[in-house]
Image: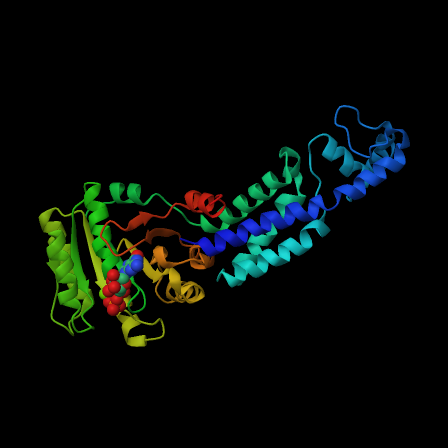
Length: 361
Ligand SMILES: Nc1nc2c(ncn2[C@@H]2O[C@H](COP(=O)(O)OP(=O)(O)OP(=O)(O)O)[C@@H](O)[C@H]2O)c(=O)[nH]1
Ligand SMILES: [Mg+2]
C-alpha cells in the first residue's frame, strides 16, 4: 500500500541530508581560517574555537535572522542544526513534484510544503539532533496535519448514538459501496453491534440480487423493494425494521451516481429529508487518486458527507487520495478497504499511515 509515495518521501529525506552535508566543507574552511593553529579544520565539540564566538555575538547584536557561518559551525559543534532556506529550495521543489505525481491535491501539497518549511526553519530545529531527525519530524507533522483533519472516534460514536443509528453510503458507480456495507456489517458484528442492510439502490438491475448474496452469507436481514422503487422508502423501512427488532445500525446502500446527475442527487436529498440519516459516508476508490479527491469535494458540496471510505487501498501505490480527501473536504476518512474479503476493512488511522509512509521499508 502507498509504496510509490513512500519511496518519494524517503528521497526527500536523502536530498535534504545531502544538501546540508554538502555545506560542511565550506564551514570547515571558514573555521580553519579563523583558527589557523587548529590545523585540522574540523569542528571540535569539546573545545569550541574562541574566534568563533566573536562574530557569533556580533550577528546576535545585529538581530540578523540569517545564521552566520560561525553560528552554523557552532550549531554543528553543539549537535544542533541550522538549515537555511536555500538548503531546502531544491529538495522542497522535488518534494512538491513528487506529491503532485502521487496525486496529492495541489492545495494539500502546498500545505505540506509550508509545514515542512516552517518546521525546518523554525524554532523546533533546536530540539533535534540530526538533519535526518529534523526532516522526519517535519514530514511527520506536515502529513499528519492534513491527513488527520476532522477525525473522530467512529466506534465511540456508534456506542453513544441513540439506536438505531442510520448510515447511508454514497458515491459513483463501482467504487465498492455495497461491498463496504457488507464489510462494515461484519466490523460492527465483531464489536457487538447488530445491523440490517437496506438496499436503496433501486436503480441498477441486479442490485437486489448482489446485496442479497452478501446478506445471506453474513446472515443479515435485508430490506429491499422492487427495482424502480423509491430509495428513501426502502431506507425508511430499514429504520422501522431496526427500531421494531432492536437492531443497532441501519446500513443504507444507494445507486452509484455522478454529482452532476440531478435526478439521482435529488434522491439523496429526499433520503436526507425522509430518513434524516445519522451519517452519510462517501465511498470512493483510493486508486482513483485525484478523481476521487475531486469527487469527494463535489459530493460534499452537493449532499453533505460526514466522512469517507477509501476502497481498493490494497491496489493503490500513490496514496494521493488518502492524503488529500480529509483536507479538501474537511471530513475525515474513516475506513480503508484493503481487499475483497469481508475482513478487509481497516479503521483509518492517520498516525499509523504517517508512520508507515515514513517507515524504513
Ligand atoms: N481489491 C479490492 N476490491 C474491492 C474493494 N472494495 C470493493 N472491491 C471490489 O470492487 C468491485 C465493485 O464493488 P461494489 O461493492 O459492487 O461497488 P458499488 O460501489 O456498490 O457499485 P455500484 O453499485 O455498481 O455503483 C467488486 O468487485 C468488489 O469486490 C477493496 O477494498 N479492495
Ligand atoms: Mg452497489
